[in-house]
Length: 346
Image (cartoon, rainbow, N blue to C red; front, side):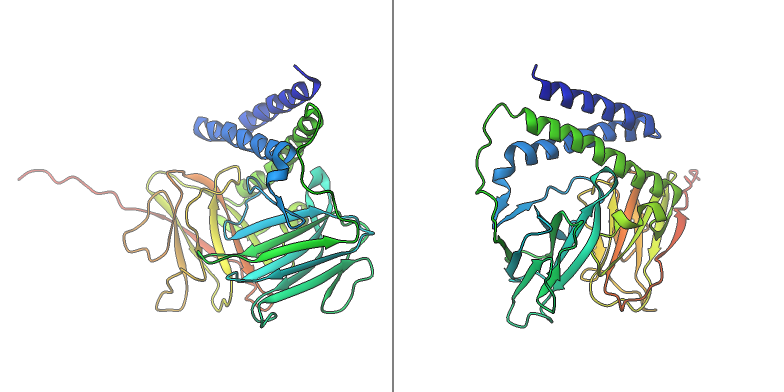
């Protein structure tokens, strides 16, 4: 066995042990082991198969950990803070393109240091371009601060139309994607480091969700910087821990306009691949409020529902885009379905 595989196997063993020690019950522990497997697969995919994910100067991100938003397509690239870049694009059928610059913080977590966004209102002809450079300024420029290391593009896309097309050009472009030479040990060591760092970082999100049991709130101070992935978005974290026959009702703040969403995740902050509720599909109650039933079961008359796929423990994230949106936190209420009594025969 090569040194790279030994390093990766050691990281996997440590990750499995940490997840097992953190899980509150056997079912969650089993799901945690699968979570580790998917984190390893994502790290290896980027390290060994990255040439398949890269096009137009950007790499497609695999949304595995950290509560990814299923409404977004994610693309990223490493940048030189002294470099000069131009990001151009066509919106096509997408609702919004967010461009964010990140520094790297604790455990390699992204820290937002620059932001711009484009939508049909700001791009009447559907096209846009922005210069990224240390001295960039004005409506078509975004200054790169010295600590920036990554540019991330989030494409808000929720239908079957053609999504936005992006291209990142540079005065010192990276080499074209190619099959890496050698035995791949360097990529295995990087994957081990990514696994350790990502698990350590996002277990803190799991701990935060436990503290916010059956409610939503702004992220705790120690996580606020890493939660902020988009400069125009407010994020509310939360967790649910439901007894049998219980369900949670989430009531959104009144007066919301534009994009907002509530998505449900596993205990480990992996998306459950179940539809969330958002501004496009929400049914509004007669009083103007949006109420969402969350859980493995819900009342038959619930207008908006999020299925937790049998799970009674998990987490969720509410996102609200727009600095002019209401600042109130979504409210929650715990409910229990009444038991059905068996009637005796006459």
